[in-house]
Image (cartoon, rainbow, N blue to C red; front, side, top):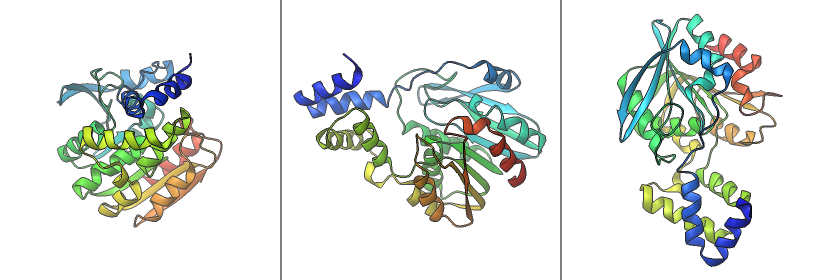
Length: 269
């Protein structure tokens, strides 16, 4: 029996149980294979670690420039996803810092969820001043969530694909498994109870109203199949000093390695 049929069968018995299984799904990120073209960038880094909750968080640093950049990867990603971007920033005089989120990459593997990540980002944002913040995918909205909490002010922000409403992610998960609103509502209640976050209030387009950057760029591929471009457009429209840049034929994940994105970074920072 495949996963989708299993979920639909369990839902007939109990939407609450189905919601718990779905929450387990977003609490245990898959460990993706470490691709050969990412290895060299990790080997070039200065590696360290910090303790966050019950995790040893893998930290990486490149370059010795006077300006500092923080890179935030997406769900089931890792710092090495920025392997093409890092050399560009180092060449432009940045000291580049990134990390593997809890249960991602080389960090400790144990149960986690989306909501640990913005708390970790807050810790990193408080440690020092960053001239540039670059984010990708769900990492984009989680970074905005952390910044909103801190009423953050910065120089330059580059967001590569940005989801907006967390409830849309829940809806997409429900749709993917062919489930009903009964499970969706049970899922929302479970998140509310387990994490003390209110899923219905988690919107990137609201978070950006509490932060300030001199320059902000929202970059999205026109035909992104993972996060629809309308999400980024909506978030960008709610932020002062923000510019939207639409790309084509870069996809969602491959964007980070595309010449088009590297050219934008070369020009804007």
